[in-house]
Amino acid sequence: MTILIRAAEAEELSASGVSLLADVPDTDGHLTSHRSIFLPGKEGAPPHLHREAAELFFVLNGSLRVLTGEDLIELHQGDFLHVAPNTPHAFEAAGTEPAEVLFVLTHAKPRFGYYRLLERAYRGETDWSEVAKTSDLYDNHYVESPTWQHR
Image (cartoon, rainbow, N blue to C red):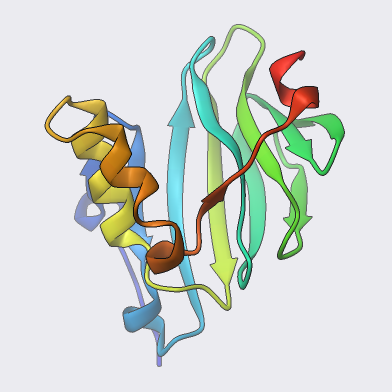
């Protein structure tokens, strides 16, 4: 199966800065992928983990501060990062420029519904408690991280 998503065809979620590329049903269960743009000073994702999915980060532009386990690292344009299942992680733009990142999750559950729910939460159209209720559905489990809180 070949999948081609032209930039103009990707579903854009403007409040969250997410472009939806291909989801698990589109790839016969193999992966889900999206591109995100994170503005400086705005958290990209709070600490969370995926029990089933591995997550791949590829920085297209800018720099990204990432929590992996209890380590804080900074990724720059062209850097690649693999986060294994059950590894707490979080991320945000680092520096003064937006960070543009390609994400791929393997062994993932369908996730486009999650990103659309986040979009509604960012727009104030749904409560963040609704997002929290979807942990098992989307394999996105929020966790506490003193390292991230004190960054």
